[in-house]
Amino acid sequence: MTLTTLSDEELLAGGDAASFELFYRHQAERVLAYFARRTREPELAADLMAETFAAALASRRRYRRERGPAAAWLFGIAAKKLADAQRKGYAESRARRRLGMERLEPSDEDLRRIEQLGALDVASLVDVLPGDQGAVVRAHVIDERGYRELADDLHTSEAVVRKRVSRGLATLRDKIGSRP
Image (tube, rainbow, N blue to C red):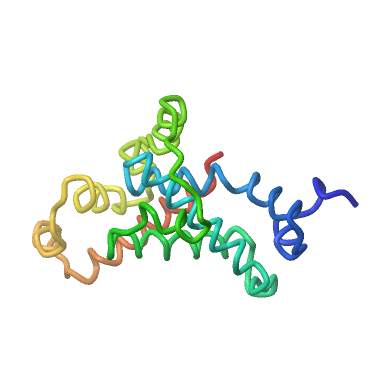
């Protein structure tokens, strides 16, 4: 069996550099798109991607296939890196310091590609949500209306509105995650 026929789980568990490189190639664009959509800053997205893969490389021996897919494990790391960056604001140079590397400036073409990955027409995705989830997600996320205000307008409880928004966002995450 060649490396190219192995699943991401097998590649991650492989433990060698070639296996991890192929895992990286399978997942890099998805991870970069994840950060680009959430940060709207191409350079920060690229930094966070580098930091995520550095952490994945350093901790790949802790991955356990029975706990879930390799992509889920990787995106768990990505979510933590994003939260760290948002909370502490230090994602800029952390990965470089850890790896002893100088900052590489992305080219204009690199920045355009990252922006394209992050350019997602959220409004059109919201339109395909079932029932009234689309309306509450649009009102809360896009129009930035509060839960209490929406609950009053819909003559329902705030908990019901929160649940609809939560379910709608979960559906969107699934749809976005399945995009190429």
